[in-house]
Image (cartoon, rainbow, N blue to C red; front, side, top):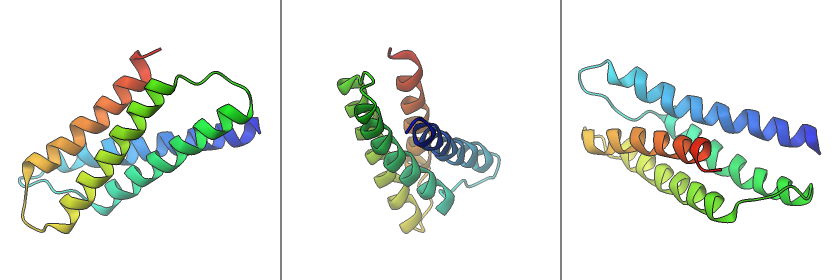
Length: 114
């Protein structure tokens, strides 16, 4: 079960890397846009995050429910914004920067909220 937890954590971090890496990569172009990899990263973060909570409960490890609820909510908002950004071919910089800011906020919650 510990191996499952570590694998889920690895894929959770890989989803974060796809989100933030894609964000910084697109920032260097004149008109940044949200790519499908950002949707994949958002889906990966939401699914593996929920699975990590379940594994922590199964292992009788402590779970900070308000923190996890906030992170899951941010991940779902992030996913909706990413889908909206990909589906609308019109360049919307506010949606693009919103996705990047929410990805960073999600990481900040994970790191700074003990």
